[in-house]
Amino acid sequence: MSDWKPRLIASDMDGTLLRSDDSVSDATVAELGRWRAEGVPFVLATGRPPRWMHGVRKVLGHGTAVCCNGAVLLDLEPMEIAAEAPLEPDALQSITAELRARQPTTWFAVEYGWEFRHEPVYRPRWDVDAPGVAVATLEEMTAAPAAKLLARHESMAPDAFVELIDEIVGDRATVTHSSTDALAEISAPGVTKATGLATVAARHGIGPEDVVVFGDMPNDIAAFEWVRDGGGRAVAMAHAHPDLLAVATDVTVGNDEDGVAAFLASL
Image (cartoon, rainbow, N blue to C red):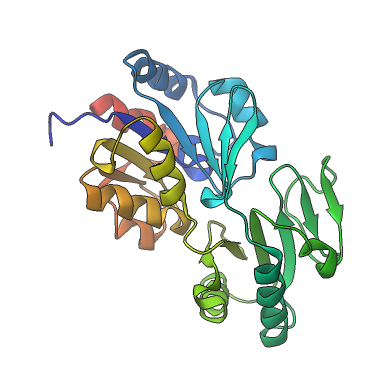
């Protein structure tokens, strides 16, 4: 594949495109600009909700973001949600009820895209006092469709907790994780970064064989498998989770060494 070039570039944000200080390096911006000038679109594929995309929009200013692990498609230039695939209230209610019964010290939060609600005992790690963030009861949180349900445990081992959540949820929803904490991210059935990327790629008339995707955590696995199995390139960062490294076609240097830009430059 020495002469292979992508027709679409996709990348995770945290731990991948972004450096540890949450910035996009000048080298990365320049490299993405070079590909854009050649007509190659760039797509962000992230677990982040739309409300966390303002900073990267100021840097990139264009393109599409697959947010909330595939549940929301965001047009960056106007900052408008183009499509959603939410968890419906009946699923939210049944899943949270069973998880609470099986593991009573599991605490919940819900992403609605532009807003975030969490139980009083749920401890958010970021934007605690940000606009759109508020405390709510579980009954209130699960009364409306949600882009993503978050389940957190303060003492269980992260992998063990996510495995437990996945076992309990079954085929009622999609469970993944992207944190070093015991935090499970739960989306509508079949909704992943892969489904979001496939939708965006199809709009450009592009299949997985012409896509390169970058990532570092298990919530990137579905996208990696979609690209890899279709003949494209699935590129893991050097520090990536072992489960993601196992399905990668390539490995690049870490995010603080501008691994995305380095790999693109090699093409």
